[in-house]
Structures are given as structure tokens and as C-alpha cells.
Image 1 (cartoon, helix red, strand yellow):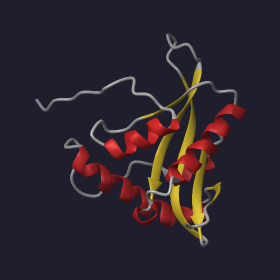
Image 2 (cartoon, one colour; image 1 turned 90 degrees about the vertical axis):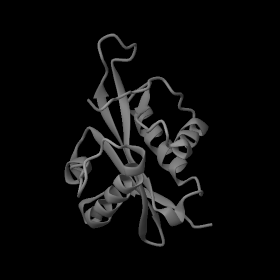
Image 3 (tube, helix red, strand yellow; image 1 turned 180 degrees about the horizontal axis):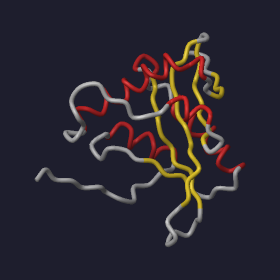
Length: 153
């Protein structure tokens, strides 16, 4: 097993994080027929790195980035019990490092940061047909709460 460490993402990581972003999109294309064709970008990565409202971390093995994830502070809807929550995004683990529970290390670090910010709730989105990711999140303690449905018209 590889020795994994975590650190804050920085702008020197941009090239690799752009590759990770394309890895996320490549993994999601077969799960989502609503994704546009061609080159896509989900994230403004420099903004994610520099924002005071976001804790963006990367996992390192042998001085190479192998995974990423962030937690963004968000205001909740006025009808939710917690006025703020943490939203988790850009969870990605390089294929050759999957199965080592690196996502759990990242999630724990993000959860610890959220607790330090006095948050009581974390949220994330995952495709309903991404059973592997759902199992990993459930193992960590997440529960399903909402299904988003769509139709072409």
C-alpha cells in the first residue's frame, strides 16, 4: 500500500487538477446522458484554491497528486434546520489508486475542517447509478435524501 499524505491544493497543482477534472467528466459521461458533447469544464480551479469559503485538499503519494476534494461553505435554505452546511465536491481518485480508501482520508479531513467551522451538516451530489461512489459515501456515514429526476422534451 502507498503512503498517502494530504495538503491544501495550490496553484502549482493546476495542471494535474485540470487532468483530474477531465477524469471526473470522463467518469460521469456514461452516467449522465444530459452532459454536452465535446470538451467540458466544471470548475474554476484557481477560484476553488484561493477562496476563503472553500477548503480544497489533495492527496499525495511519492510527491505526486493522486486525489482531490473540496468543501465549500454554503448557506442553507431558510427552511432547513442548519443555517449553513458544507458542500463536498471535486472528489476524484486516480484509477490506479482506487480501492485504498483515499476518499475516506479526504472526507475525514473535510469533515474535520467543517467541524472547526462549527458546521453540523455536510452534503454532496452523486449520480444515482454510480453505485461504487454511493457505497463509499454510505460507508463514511452519508445517507440518501433526494433524487433529482429529468426528462428530455
